[in-house]
Amino acid sequence: MSFVTASGLSKSYPVAGRSLHVLTDLSLQVEQGQMVAIMGASGVGKSTLLHLLGGLDRPDAGTIQVGDHTVTGMPDADLVAFRNHSVGFVFQFHHLLPEFSALENAEMPLRIARTAPAESRLRAAALLARVGLTDRADHRPGMLSGGEQQRVAVARALVTRPALLLADEPTGDLDETTADALHALLRDMHREFGLTAILATHNPRLAEQCDRILRLEGGRLTESS
Image (cartoon, rainbow, N blue to C red; front, side, top):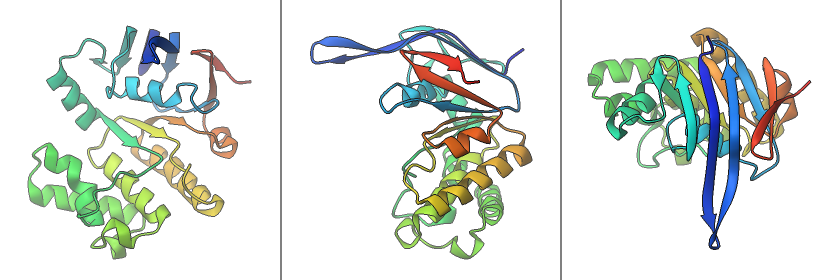
């Protein structure tokens, strides 16, 4: 059985008095442990799809199953718990809190989940070490480079030990060299943590290093040969 299954997903948004259909009867199956790239033109709906899979938004129609969780139809409180415990998100823009240090940003999901402060700090510090930022742990985001900020975002995404990682153009705001380093980090973390990962990307080099490449066009996904 697939770890992520989406069936008949549809999503539209009101635009200028009409409905803009972004996803139409979309289906997706991802096996546990796979790293899947989703490619497509800007505005085609890649972010929308990731938001639906991760419970950040709800579809107009269709069903989503992630492991034992039926995401569609979940009460709001259960959806919050699902997002915080089962899914790690990495976005194009890191969304770090500027007033907090790298370590405090990395541990934020655990603090929100009311994990004991000592354990939160220990787990966040271990992940910052894993992404090579031990010596930057006390620095605020404004003191970090773009690549360092995104590595903090990766640590934050994984600190709750999620089963599913969703990354939306994670290298889109980085130069080529920094992007390549982040690609390598994501692949290493995927293997090391036994993650199932779905990445939306414009970068063919990142896509080619994934297990599968899917293309989103006309509201539906097709497998790339």
